[in-house]
Length: 160
Image (cartoon, rainbow, N blue to C red; front, top):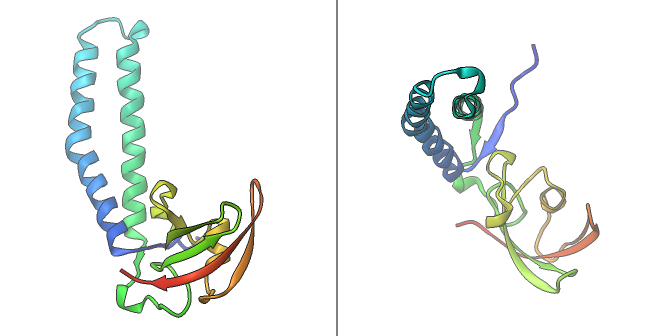
């Protein structure tokens, strides 16, 4: 049997997943159960879209619960004290100059389980994250992204 995938995460990422799991198990399951009860009251299940929708939502929620439990069971938490400020690693806050947009951007390098591009949390497995891993201040990298090639310079590495 193959070994389970390890999910490298920060402590903050683990807490966020634990909160989502707790919400799904306590609040969301009850909401869905109520929707199913109400939909059953409408009678004929063969033409009952409310029932179908509630059952689909239930299946999605149960799938997400299994996914979260698996991620948490296989989480490998990065110790904040082990995060280097010499080279980019998981947990690093990295200030880079993005040459394409001629601007400075702060990224946090995280494991794939907690990546959130809208919050500038990029996965170590993403093209930019992979390109930054192991780099030092002053290093310039070129990363192939879906839109072409982007050039970045590492300006600062820190931990929070």
